[in-house]
Length: 356
Image (cartoon, rainbow, N blue to C red; front, side, top):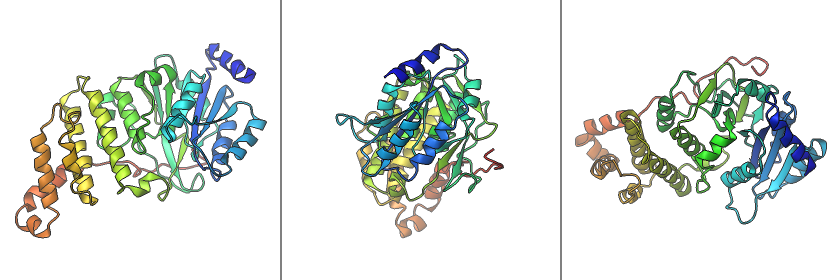
């Protein structure tokens, strides 16, 4: 298409690199209009917006086509039928179609502020692999919440950021990342086997590739729609959700196997395994699930199966009121405290004023 070719030429302008905004969507006719409004209202003009539909059965496509007629920088594609269903495959397909030097993955119910892309481009240079911006939370409209997704110390090292991910204290949200296209591609794209924990896995894997990260912590420039009853997170006790946790952790374990990580990272990851592959399933009624982990070599290449089994038996037996009270009281309390890690995720607020 001529328009796409014309936009690509702007990549040669040092002060105006093309930014690709990739939006996966599925049955989002109620929300995607506001998301696209936040894109087309950008003060920065050299962008392309690629919407990938994951098989919507509502009027999402009709709505997106209205925007295409008004602004040819918006394009719309169906996920190919030979690609696995899911948001990750849609994101990867959008990435394959992208022409930009920089990439932003935007969910189809979230919002950007009008100056988001301009402000980000002003901070980008050829040495930045990932630019991180703060994300704020909203429910129905911007300003109905003063919560931040999380806070970030701009002086944080990659090691410190990775440990926060391992502590389930995710320092940033997907919308808050601007990727160098070259670096994102080097990381291996989104994991299409995951139905949940995909953001955690993608960002943890990226950090393990030692990116040059720049953080702008001045004010949030994007808004994450918090829907407590929407999506797989509301079914956190399901087998599907638990399986995604396992696959995500095993993926990072395989990546770490070929990295020379220090002891602090190794200990944080070990604690993550105990929290999410022993404590979490046992407390959510999947008491025999951890036994399956014992045979997973990619989890135990440098870890003790015996310690894993010991912790599993203590947590499992601790579910019995009598055993907990008379036999394992002090031991179980000690383990519980060791597995509890402070988190500021969705706990910090900011001063909202006209979206700033």
